[in-house]
Length: 311
Ligand SMILES: Nc1ncnc2c1ncn2[C@@H]1O[C@H](COP(=O)(O)OP(=O)(O)OP(=O)(O)O)[C@@H](O)[C@H]1O
Ligand SMILES: [Mg+2]
Image (cartoon, rainbow, N blue to C red; front, side, top):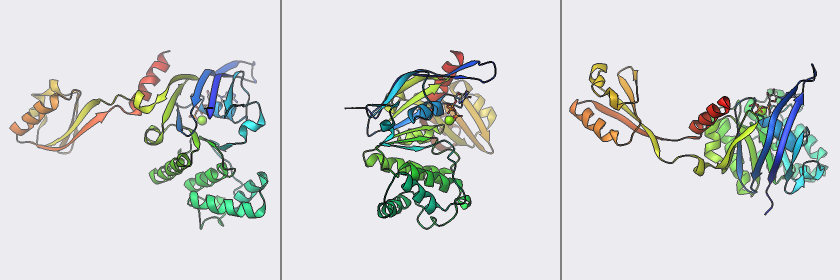
């Protein structure tokens, strides 16, 4: 089966105008995105995520290497036929209403008036902007702008939707709305490729992720293969014990944090929990909560980041 995206040895070097100094921002990137999946492209600021996305969407050209969208080279315009794109900081004509803007998009795609109206109706419903389409976009909140941007990315009913930081700057509700739209697109059999800093969002919805650091791919794979399912540590919240009492069992704890009358202690080995609970009972203290912590994408990302910085 043809992959939605196949990146082969993609590299990009920018040349500064001043002294023509070269800056390599993407090094020999190889990546494969299976069709019908949600793919998270992760990396810290300056990692090269936007550069990669600009290369895939034909906004800039590679220094070497290439990529294919559903088997078509990114050099060919047809590679963008089945693609929708939400840029990192989309710019809108703010004096247009949402409706005027979507009509403008529809005209760019060459749709007739009636198909445009039908599509706009569908999209407004999907991005939850029904009722706000007659407002000028300068009155839209950041979340509404992001959603109207998403609507324009979906106008041509794309098979592949590429989004650069679609959740950035949104509050938890806005992020959930974008996540739900992404999941809806997957249900419709589409492929979604998006970059993000917000690791928890990637963790919630991605089938596969790649981590890019300093222009180099550090890791690609299914989340479940990446993350260690074993419990990494256990956090126990206690009440009714003093610092002095706790000092008796200090060697057992990997950390302790005091907050008013509550104390949060951390155990780095599961087998220590039983001992701790026995001690708590003996001291007549109270256990408020016990939270096992498994490895998260954030832990992995930080580990990769340390390796990347050292390399
Ligand atoms: N046109 C350009 N000329 C010179 N350098 C550039 C150009 N565009 C990007 N860069 C550099 O390439 C590197 C990667 O930038 P890019 O925007 O791809 O990162 P990013 O991963 O998207 O970061 P962020 O998370 O901040 O959006 C940065 O060091 C940036 O300064
Ligand atoms: Mg970027």
